Length: 107
Image (tube, rainbow, N blue to C red; front, side, top):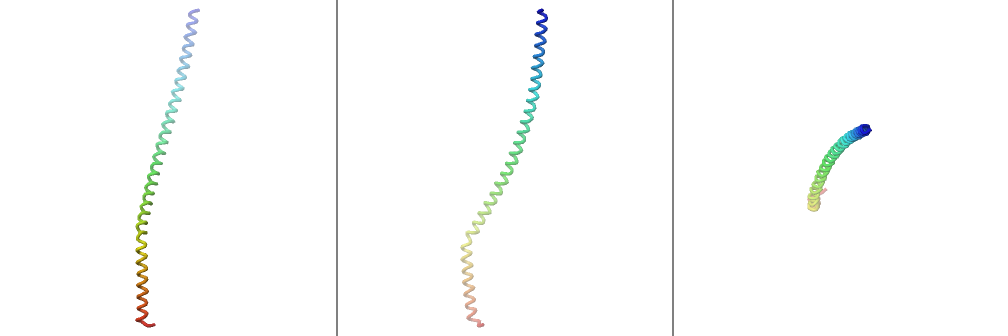
């Protein structure tokens, strides 16, 4: 009878060991899958962040070019009052020339 109890205990221990081995195999497979998914997600996030960084750099460069163009335009616009005065003076001189020409050359 003691032998039977020991044999039953041994069979139970073997079944428990097999169950633990099966459980560990399943856990190992799930862990491998999770690790694989994690690597895939990390790679996906890395690629997305690289694309985002590239787009941000391109937007920043375009913004800087726009700002530089605005600054150049602002510098050119600051000359506008001086050019306006020159055009008015030129118009006044043309009128004066026309007036003198009309006096000298009768029609």
